Image (cartoon, rainbow, N blue to C red; front, side):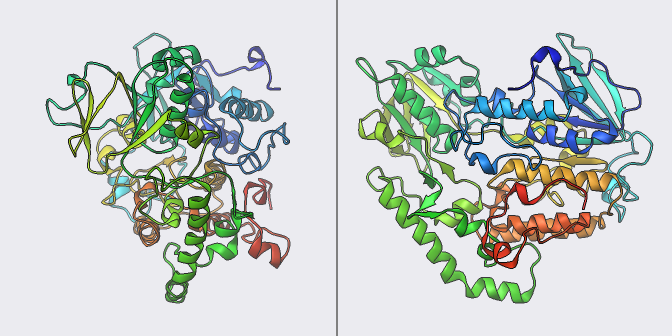
Length: 533
């Protein structure tokens, strides 16, 4: 069990000599605090608890999408290793709190400290990051002088307290806090609807009893067909079982591939994409001519693997029956990190008529009685739930000052992060938790280890132009694999990505014990033990 709350001593004041600020106390923030502990970091967490979205932005039915054994820090195992493969959100929070207990991370965390802005102290404009050949002007992340000032509010006070730091680590995450809302022309938005409209962010704040009362006996429309929308529809169907219940209608724009489990025709899923051999055939950033030729020659093989998986999913799930077969190959969904695990009982509820599906491929709008699809069909509704996602980039833009706010995104609409961590044009700042993979925990932990190596001087960053070229190569690798490349997903070249960070750190790139395992065994967090090598 995790330590009692009263034994957890957190920060109440910011030490005058702190060098590193970490903004956010979720998975990435805790991983950063662990790796940067020797620098006595200050973790600013806006709420009264750690855990990030796993505590503050989940439904009662939310579970992990990654198997338990793959979702754990390399140096901290689950206590209940024999539990269900996909732990509940409460179990995830308990695990994260246990991690903070085990490594004494609470002493770095300042709860109830909301960051309202940061101010750059390193000079006028963005010259340090934009015009010099080296990042931050001289390439050094820690110079011995403050480079950023972090403004926070605490408790019920609106007074902003400013604290100076040499380095800032942004761990605010891509999900929660800022909902992505659909936009409508005047007279076609929620203002004309006589029912209730709620984003999934607000739904997360309700108790189980409140969610049941909200949906029971109501005509509910759920907008979206990704994981959060599917979980919402299932909870709606469960609340409407029995006499007086109403069906829940899902408004689906683009169906996505869902897995009922991590086995395909009896074979473990990792064989297809998570071994060094399987990833050999997929594009990777800045690859040479020979690799490009190999990737092109093996295109039929990659298509066959994708078709093999699709054949199983079409056999296992009633996709054609409900018009939910995605228009893109499975590999494109996987390469953009849009694949999800289907919750138990979802299609059973659909078979019972408690979940219905309507396609809205070209758009929809509100009416007084519900929503109207572009083909003129009107769906009556008492409640419209918007599972339309979150805007993690806007969270960052709200904190960053000019001119860095306008430099955050590049022409691709993504945050151009070298090694998924350093923005070439924003000095003395790192971003952790903005790159996706099959296991975001592993991705964040390894990046925090890499960042610790950078701050300790174990390696130097290349020039600004070289970092920009590297990111452009990542975009091109994603673009060549999936049309949904703007999600910054590294799933099809995750091992290569980890290899590059290990090479920077001067540790072994090949992590397995023999060549057979190196080629055909899955790579996971346990292959990257955080010990000095």
